[in-house]
Length: 400
Image (tube, rainbow, N blue to C red):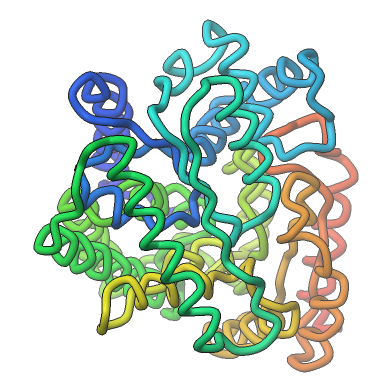
């Protein structure tokens, strides 16, 4: 049996409930922006703009088991089945809000999209801008094949200046530098706490498993730069620290330590990982939640933001991602890794077979690739995946 539920989970549930209530009702007093998960939200918060994340809403719908139905709704309106399920869920909730949790997201006043995570978000948000007849700002971050060069930082920084002008023009709100600095400090404190929590999983046994990490990342995604997020992660940090001190593991009889690559399977979060937990396997680290373990460095604020948001994982080369996995495997003493070949997220999934080969050759650690989708259950084969998991765990146990 897994460890008892984190007491902090109840706090997180209330925190997220308040967030969705806030964006629904405060929109009558403040502008509301829909943003992508890789957008520099600190600027918006400093300008008093409420923010909503359609990707987070898609994960919520997936976890509540309505992701497939809302995806089918979007497909019925002409959107291709091959599109990202986050996008289809968001569009489906607009076409049929009565079938969507919370009746969908409240209508935005403007859209902020950044292509540092994928190109799909750009076309997705352009479709939203066309439907709602609202302004959209697209922040372009060049793909990093190698290191982050100074000219790239200057290019992205100049766009951040344009983004501020865009928001000011469409909301008549100004960027207060003092408030901006406060938000940046809160954002960095949140990132620091989240990183500290993740690093506690180096302990044996690990105090957290993948579902714990995936659920608790919600606050750092949608509430980054707020006092509420900082207070929550302080509480979570203290609870996880107590688990480590007591030697209490997420998996009571931890036998194999694993790494996870790609977005979580929101539509069967606990059921899927229970296949591993029953055999003593704990996912002690992952590449997904680490995407928000990236602080804004000291220095000129816009330049620091340009560096932070251009350097996110999915905007980096396959060799960089392979090196990161190799380092995590060694740092967390991982015995094997599982890669989710996620049909919705092409940037995350393309190249995984090459990364698997490189990582296994370098570390001697076996890897497993499973085919599924983060929210759409039509692309999950229970029997096939269970058989592959069993074969992989047998490989771990045999030491082959």
